[in-house]
Image (cartoon, rainbow, N blue to C red; front, side, top):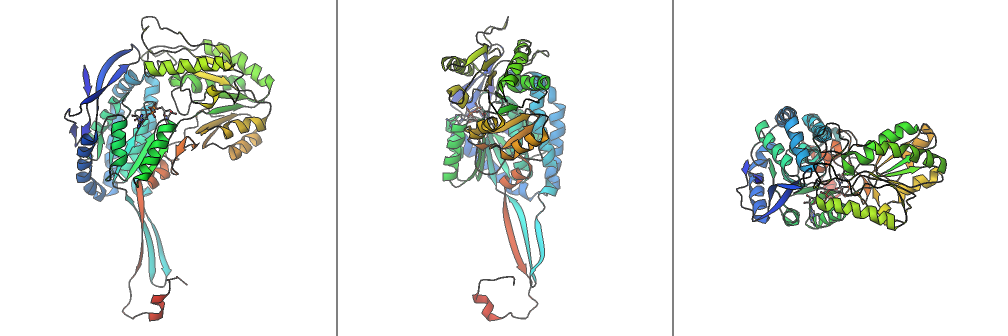
Amino acid sequence: MRQIDHVIAGGAGGGGSVRTGEVFDPNSGEIQAHVALGSAAELERAVAAAQAAQPGWAATNPQRRARVMFRFKELVEREMDALAHLLSSEHGKVIADAKGDIQRGLEVIEFACGIPHVLKGEYTQGAGPGIDVYSMRLPVGIGAGITPFNFPAMIPMWMFGVAIACGNAFILKPSERDPSVPVRLAELMLEAGAPEGVLQVVHGDKEMVDAILDHPAIGAISFVGSSDIAHYVYRRGVEAGKRVQAMGGAKNHGIVMPDADLDQVVADLSGAAFGSAGERCMALPVVVPVGDETADRLREKLIPAIAALRVGVSTDADAHYGPVVNAAHKARVEQWIQTGVDEGAELVVDGRGFALQGHERGFFIGPSLFDRVTPQMQSYKEEIFGPVLQIVRAPDFETALRLPSEHQYGNGVAIFTRNGHAAREFAARVNVGMVGINVPIPVPVAYHTFGGWKRSAFGDVNQHGTEGVRFWTRVKTVTQRWPDGGVGEAANAFVIPTMG
Ligand code: NAD
């Protein structure tokens, strides 16, 4: 059985972990590897290596750090096929989607290649008589990232791409459910020229996360995962005096105005609701048609589109989506479908009981469609994170606007319309962090920033882009003067200095 070890100080972790976790092949349902589940002892070794490496890395000029990023990007591109297969074999997303996962991460690496320009400080010549002021952005020191299973390439790269380019050492604690791609990325960073200890991977579960949260040498923690754990990580990390950004769950709504092009909407919704088996924080699992007539027309078109979806093994090039990540998650999604039925929603298409011939023990779920879901239902309030689309009918624009605005999550939202005024109004007023206008999955490009509102994100600084640079650096501001030898008026020394 394959063993997946930590990457500490440029090598494998030495197999010191007592506990291990099971990594499944979601296509077959079999265990394919065991991953080390580390403890404070392994973290201590990683922190020591990070402490040894970080000052030299921070002192390496930003152009040279950027060259490592350029080289890393080349290496990942060279290995794209192998990485996508590895990712797909543990996660279950189809190969083309796995490549997208890697590519969206690489786009943050491309942003990080421009770090010399982004890190330039600010300077004011003559802020007072003979006085200049300048600010510089310095690395925090050692940063850590705790990442979810659903984007095992992109989300680690969101974090370490920016953190490392800024001169930090970075310790990654990836999801224990699909840990192999993060290990490969750390190996490629070494090959790209990052010194040992600059990017390390420690595997584990709550025990390792708690060790990270409490370690006094780690100055900044970035987390992405479910909301309760995000909130826990945020509270405990802040309590320990660290800066923390913690992204949580989501329940993104797609508002469909009566004037929308419904064929386009159905094409967009099929991918956004069912792609990656719905295991995306920017999936669109709730659709809100405005007016009953729009709802009826939409439902009419959705049913055949859903029937045409092909669920298959993740290596099937014709499959629209593959299995979910493990048996427990499959059971949880199917339980949510039952909850929806029990609450009185109309189950129009039932994806439960789906079995793929020859892969009966794989973690497959067929697509499901609910109509007449209401805001009071638990299955509406909570994240399902599976291939389930819920129709919530709204009588008018104001009701449709209120639904995502009042939901506990506020990650992403989309509006489909031909009316520019309605779209503009919606974007300005909706209480959600990322908005798509006729764009179903509005994940911002790497040089903008990613982050939701409400229970979708704790902390106040987003991922990647210039916000990411703010998170992974501290500002130092210098006020300088070079007296010409004459002594200033003594009285001034007793008054708070002003530039007047
Ligand atoms: P998860 O919360 O189960 O796990 C995330 C990380 O937390 C993992 O590294 C895991 O090992 C660790 N963890 C798990 N239980 C823990 C505990 N009790 N204490 C401390 N750490 C613990 O999330 P997941 O199932 O891997 O990922 C799916 C979730 O992530 C969904 O809710 C999804 O919406 C969310 N997500 C959010 C974003 C975003 O940017 N907002 C992006 C991707 C995924």
